[in-house]
Image 1 (cartoon, one colour):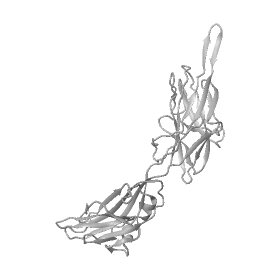
Image 2 (image 1 turned 45 degrees about the vertical axis):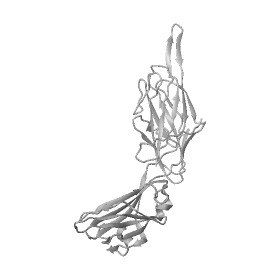
Image 3 (image 1 turned 180 degrees about the vertical axis):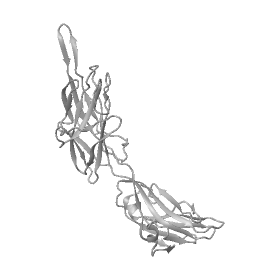
Image 4 (image 1 turned 90 degrees about the horizontal axis):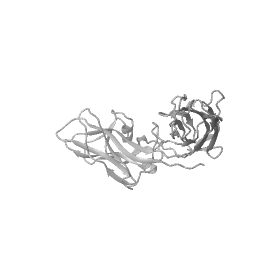
Length: 355
């Protein structure tokens, strides 16, 4: 039976969205029991696998946006370039904008986003500035933005003197005009820059760079898993040291994202119930030690089920599953070479998908 699982936990893999499939075996191990003087009775094990799935979670990411056109205010002078947005977007300290007056504002249009998607966690305005000579008082400046035709000044910053450039920022977790989460339309329409607040010593403030960092979490895409017969599989009788396969086409995982590829890793757990069966890290069986392998449809016989399913880590099952693409796969169960009880046991296999 297929059912949708939900969780608030995110994958611990580097790249952030994760898909989890719970695969549970219920079985009785084969064990020969001597009944004298009547002979030997063999107990038969039955392994049943059931599959569930849930959506994958994406890890937060950032996109950096730089000035690309003039904004509403252009009151600062320009060094080394024609326009303010050119001087502050080239990432050079030899070009800059400057002023020695209090209340001078400079705003620039910011690039539209190109890679970001999903939920915006914060928008941070940055500028890089210095005062070339020093006096008795400090010069102060702040970030300055225009969002939805409203202007906002960030916190005051005492600007570094002499040859030391300093970097200053103001983070907005929500749009200060709407008091709601930022939208991508808000970001694309944003103007950002600087304003002078205090000219304590009467010196010139220089700003060589202005940029915006958008922190976002990509959209959660639906990833599903199905099987040929309603997400259950009966392995039949299992003996000591036996190898039983589902077939490489039994399961099918699908990346339902319209635009993003994912990678998928696989790991497993010990079998619990009675005497625990430990999952071998190398798929090497022993007394109450079982192994597990996985493989993809299309692999040739003798070179199939090549992916070891470990316990303490995870191995790659699918390096890149394209947007909208399905992939059939299967499992190979390697029974322990010796059983010490006949108690029903269960275990879990986890698939983790990351964007």
